Image 1 (cartoon, rainbow, N blue to C red):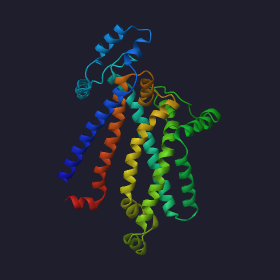
Image 2 (tube, one colour):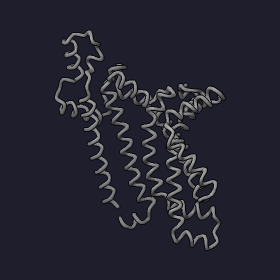
Image 3 (tube, rainbow, N blue to C red):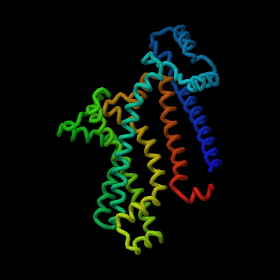
Image 4 (spheres, rainbow, N blue to C red):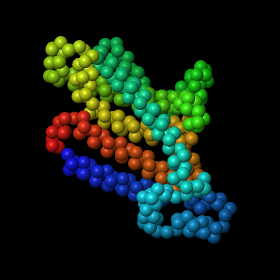
Length: 315
């Protein structure tokens, strides 16, 4: 078990290093001159060269990468060209909103998907199963941004139950929560549709195993069989998809936050790309990549905790 954790941790760290190299290389090799964006097209070549020197953009690529990594180790992400403040401050200011939205979306995804998946498996080849499959297929087919606009038209414009966008700040907790409901539902419905189908398929596969038939023959109630025996043994593929979907939920906030005009990391990266704000884009792309890699690493560890066969193999 210890050797397994060491291997996974080393692989995790190597992946993070590789991701940082790719992110830095791609961002610095893209066409466009940050100095020209900041000073404007009417600026003189001397002024542009002076600004590149001030920002360190005239140094060799390897040297710039080393300085960037060294800064990241100390929490220094550089200074934003567009906002004129440290990038770390921008991230710290907007991160709570994005994480709150992702966690709320994840909670709604798990509740919806597990409930619908269990319902479909329990009613296999009956109306409940067909209804869940139809709804989940629609959820997979509908783009999140289009679903977001439909939800705004229905619940904000027509019914006026929820705000159409914006964020009042954490000083008003109830108003803040209301402003996150529609974005979280937009994220959860699309991701939950996929997880519901995976839950159904995994549970149906477990239901065909000998121990499940034995549990039914012993007279245990249907609900107890599902909760105590079938669902725990069907968790491995469910956890796999759920871990990937958490990463998708976080990265999906880039679109959703712009649709609902939420001041989170998703809107920040859109603004940074528009302004060719190199340091800010680098930091945010790396952060989203780290979230995806970390989610996959966490899933690998959870495999061992929920699957006794892996525990026995690693013992």
